[in-house]
Length: 361
Image (cartoon, rainbow, N blue to C red; front, side, top):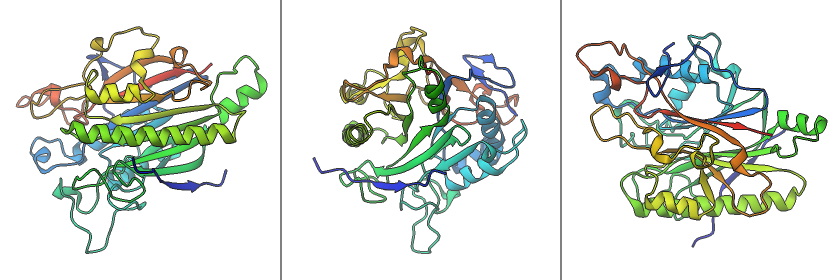
């Protein structure tokens, strides 16, 4: 296999409701001080047919912003998130008050050129999937709570034969970018310094957002190979250079593959574990709902994940006592009471937000 290289950036230390399984949630969702809340959400790139169903980005964006504000994950991985979508979500007033940029910082390079902004030169082609987004497209952004976390490294690579080449993929018409951030958990460091009981708290978290190819198992398995190699190398290098630190590693996103599939099994064999499988809820995979809510009557499935990476056996966090719950959150929008349409399909995205709560002890 080709060696994996990646972009590495050293950083200076410096109102719609939501539904879980059909039940309305409270207006705000609080989490304990010693917890970690991780979310992943495919927001759906805007497409022309969506406008005709009153499911355009303009129709959906307020509901998405308010859902993020309500559930307030500490870490959020996005997919199918154009730059203009991130810009709006960060900088608009939510229905709950305040801007999301007051809470979060963001990192995510563009999948087609590896830049912080979508290309503006006339030679760059229009998006191959949606005329609405122009030269914009997916960023697979990482959002993190800037009050709790300090970013120490940004890492970007591509799911391809040449992971270091911006815009590359396994023979697709677009790039398959993976964006990651290495974060120092200020809250954990404080607790470790004052409470010797909390020895399992990870000082650092390596968190990535990924979107695997759809409908092609071979490309997915190749992509798993790249993820495995990058995570293994990063873990090895970090622990060798930081023997006294504790590292938690996760990749979250849309993997376009269901539990039990070849791709899912390949992730397990590569040292990753589906957070649902070690949740204290003790539920079987079959007891979880699907994570898609297709607007056009295609079959739904469970394809969105928060994966933990174990890798080397000497890893200092045992996930079975970390994962408290994993929930699939449906966010209605766009006047779901309209009588001419199926109200269950009037959701803020055709994917549900996956929310994993960790009890960091």
